Length: 127
Image (cartoon, rainbow, N blue to C red):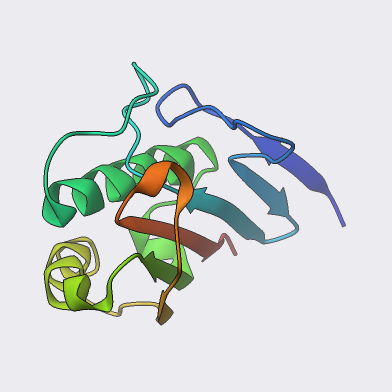
């Protein structure tokens, strides 16, 4: 099985010992994205709706760099700082998956990097 690290300036650079994504065989595994502006490395200003849109833009950039799109995504995990944000995040997320959405888990966590409200990771199938 082949294994390739994927990186793009269209999403925030990894800030630790991990890759933005790894292509392994016919799958693309995307690390969790938080709402960082890739140009500045800063958290975007705004509510959870704005943060979710930025997270999804970051994921889109990594998917594109790996030869995939939201249509290729088969699994996501949404990490929320507050489950009360679920409806808003779900609405913004749903715009990127208007048909045939992937399998998904959504969990509330005690804290996210840089105290953001949302983080999302994904797995895409390239076959």
